[in-house]
Image (cartoon, rainbow, N blue to C red; front, side, top):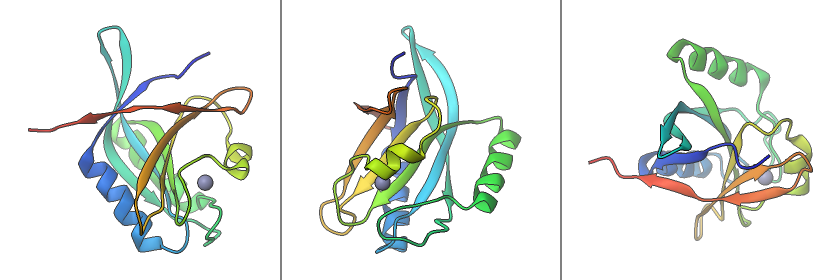
Length: 148
Ligand SMILES: [Zn+2]
């Protein structure tokens, strides 16, 4: 199995994720991105259309756990809009956006991509990952959409 789809995202959504990370600083933020799948030149593309900010119930600087209440609300809204869950995102307030051992342990399934924003208050950096069946994090590139 390989990377399930390519992610198409606008700078606006990346900024919203970074702002969410700044609001929760020094704790980790978390959320999900909803959208739709499209086929372009034989490639499966996940086009982001909504950001759902979730609550980190651990209120921790080094890990996150999406509260089940905020996750249920997001899943309900996703269904109502006919969206797919594409990405789970979180922040690494003062470190690089690499999947930690704990991040890998928490992941269940291979359908989603994982977006991390790191070094939130210094030089923010995004990392996009897919985790395979062997729990290995594979780096992915996102496609920046330029709405004009
Ligand atoms: Zn993490």
